[in-house]
Length: 396
Ligand SMILES: Cc1cc2nc3c(=O)[nH]c(=O)nc-3n(C[C@H](O)[C@H](O)[C@H](O)COP(=O)(O)O)c2cc1C
Image 1 (cartoon, helix red, strand yellow):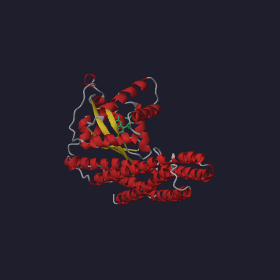
Image 2 (spheres, helix red, strand yellow):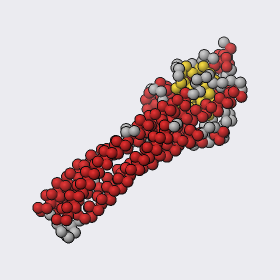
Image 3 (cartoon, protein in one colour):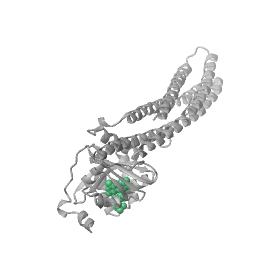
Image 4 (cartoon, protein in one colour):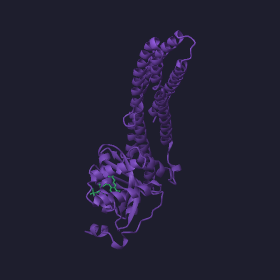
């Protein structure tokens, strides 16, 4: 009874925002249904609830009606799938005022953990605009699942590849602005950022291979034009050109296996690295939150605080497993290059047979040679880069 009286909002306060220091970390833990099991003193301070109010209450106790249902749909969808989620949430305090948080939520052994900080990054304003649109559409009857999809589509329109990319951009921006980030043990984070740099390098190398091959794929056409002009000798060149075309197409398929924007190995490695980074950032905040809670004589229940570290290690194991498939693809690519080299050699033989006449064949051979050599160099560097990623992931 006392609880109901306390949490019923005062109408005069509903449009008032609660300001709180940027150093604050609001931590809460729930069971698998979202029933609160733990809240940090800072959480209770900002939300204006007592420990008694919150004991056994559902986390929606702080739900604000301005929040679109689609966001919570996405939160639960990801948490139930074992994926972390970071996003902005408008909450309602016990006295009816509101406060915004940037919430990072993750799975634990038998429930979920949330660490929330004050949002300050530019992405916060853009996200609020999207939420306003979603709320409007939900009022018009848009169901939560469709609203969650609309949210992801809106983020895509704003240049984010998927929700993970948005989440990690927001996480980096919010985390980087923390006034106390220097006090946090960032060694793991620094290593993961190194991994991100390496995967970017690997992606650039594959893009280069793809670009070079995109260019030489036109050469068989040039060879065929040449063949058309050369009567008898043209037959051999026509066959050579066909062979080259087939082998180059095969090569492009293999390259796609690495850099396809949805299912390519490198993209999946990048996503796993991002998941690891997200978990490591949450772990760093949990560590800081624990020291804040300890100062206030409370502590996150044992066992729960280590979960983000475990999630980080799981992500790294995934990076390693994916990375191990790259050398094999590179070996197959190299075999194709050797095959193409043979075709190129046949071109040279034909060119030699035709004597000194400059019919364009020499130019084609030189371009193929350059393409093969640069691809070979890129492949060597790619293997070395992925091997570096793997050995660094192992120690995280
Ligand atoms: C760990 C964790 C933290 C959560 N934090 C919040 C929060 O800060 N604010 C909120 O409104 N919902 C939060 N939720 C989601 C709520 O459980 C609930 O789904 C949401 O308030 C929507 O309630 P409704 O589906 O009854 O409308 C959290 C859930 C979990 C598992």
